Image 1 (cartoon, protein in one colour):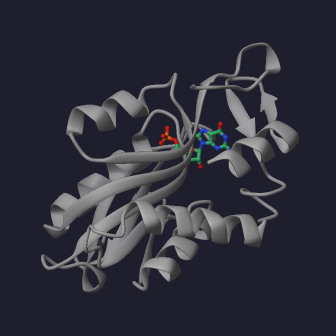
Image 2: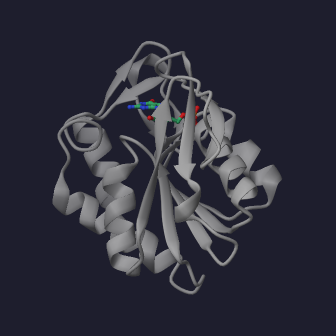
Length: 190
Ligand code: 5GP
C-alpha cells in the first residue's frame, strides 16, 4: 500500500534492536483517515471470505482492526492482555512473548464471543516473530473457529513471523513489507 509506505518513510524512526517507531500515526497518535484506508484495503482483500468477526490483541491492533471490521460490517474482538491467570474457566487463553517489551503475557478472549460458526480475520499492527499471531491462532483453535486469514499493517519480513505463518498455510496479507532496518534505514521488500 503506497500511501502507508510513504508515511513510514516520512515518519518512521528506526530504534536499536530492529524496532520501527511509528507512534505518530499508528502506535500512540493514530491517523484516523489513514486507518480508515487501511481498513478499507483489508476489507477489499478479504471481501469474499465470509468473515464473521475480526480479531486482534490490545492495544495497538485495535485501530486497524476496528476500521477493517467497520468496512466488513462485522464485530471486532480484541484479546485482552493479563499477567498469568489462575481462573480461566470462561476464557480462551494463550501465552504470548512480546518482542518489544520482552515479557510474556497471557491473552484471552471470553468464550461468549467466539463459537464454532465463526470465521475470523486476524489483524495486527506489526508482524515480527509472530508470537502475537501464534497466540491468536491458539485461541482460534481452542474456540474451534476457522481462520480466513491474517492481515498485518507492517511486516518485518526479515524476522521469523512471516515464515511461521507461511508454514501454517494460512493466507497472509501485509500492507507494507520491510526487508531491512539496517543502518537506521527502512528498506521495503520489492
Ligand atoms: P511478534 O509477536 O510478531 O513478535 O510481534 C508483534 C507485536 O510486537 C506487535 O503487535 C507490536 O505491538 C510489537 N512490535 C513488534 N515489532 C515492532 C516494531 O518494530 N515496532 C513497533 N512499534 N511494534 C513492534
